[in-house]
Image (cartoon, rainbow, N blue to C red; front, side, top):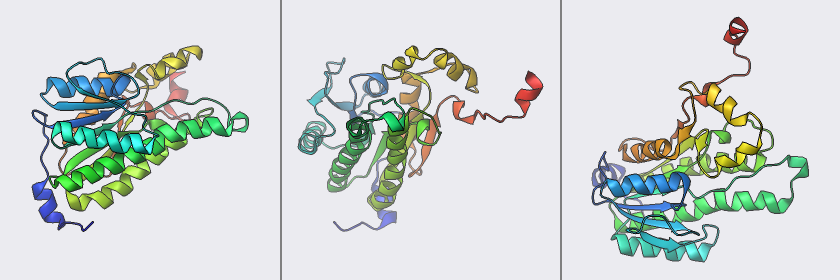
Length: 265
């Protein structure tokens, strides 16, 4: 697989701007949460959308492809089907993911594997196949994986989840270098506290959501559409690759040793 001249590849890559009209967009995990919000925005912008998920997407005017992102054969077949149906893939948002919760010393290996399989192996398989599709099409493209600010923060009881999201960010950096010569950009969006079915599980933790809301610089919890809009904006940036963009209202700016808190108490 020979690389193109980088300057030539960048000239050939489509500049997916504020409007996605006519673009082929593939979304993993597009049946709910952030993925469903990406699908909604892309459809309203006039994109042709394919959804890879183990559930049926709420939108009826998309290419719905049942796919377990941990299964290599299913991913290969689904991405090929999406490529054929969309007549090429211009933008991909990889948002399929699961949560995990538990102390490392109490965690079964099967639970560690479950989270890493979906959140990291799944991103790798989808990125690999979509990257191949984009290279073969020869018109560049943009891939955004959904990571998390948990990939850089140190949060107890979320070791498997945090490691999986840290791995996503590093995977995308490496992919950005390898795919850049083909005019393919690869970035990571890192949500914070976002109102999704996955985040809803934290309702069982007393005061957790209230603290997250209070510690966000902008205040409050994010919506799935807030993060989806940021992901698609990142996908549109023609001269940006290998980056991690936190879409978290500034909650990751909070410091447990902030000296100003002593003056506020």
